[in-house]
Length: 361
Ligand SMILES: Cc1ncc(COP(=O)(O)O)c(C=O)c1O
Image 1 (cartoon, rainbow, N blue to C red):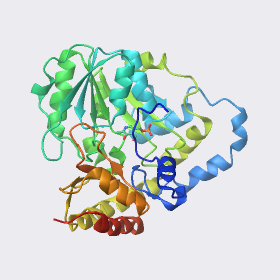
Image 2: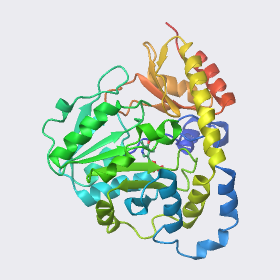
Image 3: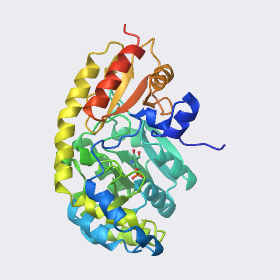
Image 4: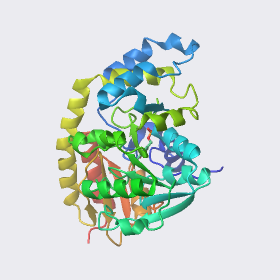
C-alpha cells in the first residue's frame, strides 16, 4: 500500500501490528485535549442528524461569525477549512511558490503539500538544544513569491519562537515580497495567546497568513475544522480555489458551539497550566531521558544512549501506550519521542511504563 505520511494517532495500524485491541491502547501520539470535546458538541450533532440530507452552507457563515468574534478579526479575513491541513494545500496550490522554506524539524504536511504543488524545498536546520532558533542569514536566497512556513509553537518540539525573531522574519519576508505562513494551530493551549499571536499583523502585512485549527484544543480531529486568517484581498484570491462545501454540516454546527463554550476554554487552560508542570517534573525524574519544558499540550523528549526511539516506542506499545516516534523528522535520528499531555491518571500510567522501558544511565 502507498504510504507517504507518518502522523500520530494511528491506533488501527498499531492494533494490527501488536495484536492489541484499539480500545486497550492509550494514545499519547496525537496531541488532542483530553478534556474535550465540549458537551454541547455531542448534543448539537445528535439534534441535527437529519441535516445530512442538506448541503452545508457554502459560505460557512455562522461558524465564520463565531470564529471572527473568538479571534477578534474581521470576517472578511477568514477562510474555513476541512482542518488546517486542507488549507496548507490550498495555500500552495493557489500561490504556486517556486521555493518553500521550512525551518526543520517541523510539521511534515508543509513539505508534502509544497512538493505536490511543484515547489523546491529548502530545509532550514533549526539550532539550539530545543531546535527553537534560526537566523535571518539562513534565509539567504529567499525570493519574491517564495513561501516560508513557521509553526509556532512548533510541532514536534513544543517550543515558541522568540517574538523578536519572528518580527525580523516578518520584515524580511515583507521586504522580499515572499509569503510568510505562521501556523498557530497549538496556540490556544497557551494562556498568553494574545501576546504571542501574529494575527493582528495581517492588517499591515499583505503576504502574512496565519493558520488556525479547532481539532486539537476542542478535541474534534474526526470532525475536521480549521481556518486561515489573512488580508481580505488574499482571502478573496484563495476563495476561488476552495471547494464550496469543504466544511461539513456537523463541523459548522459543532465548531460554533465549541467556540462559544467559555467555561470549557477556561477549564482547559487551567488544567494545562497545572498538568504541563506536573508531567514535565515527573519526566525529569526519569534517568535516561531529557524532557523539554512544554509550551503547548505535548512534550518533546530526548532519549539518552543506549536508548533509541524505535525500541522505546516498541516497548511502550507492547505495554499499551502509543507515543510518537520522531525518527521520521529531519535532524532527530533515533533520539527523540513526543508525548501528548493527557489526564492525570493516564500521564501517571505512562510515567510508570517509561520507567520500565527506559534504560537509566
Ligand atoms: C502544526 C500543525 N498544524 C496543522 C495540523 C493539522 O490540523 P488539522 O487537524 O486542523 O488539519 C497539525 C496536525 O497535527 C499540526 O500538528
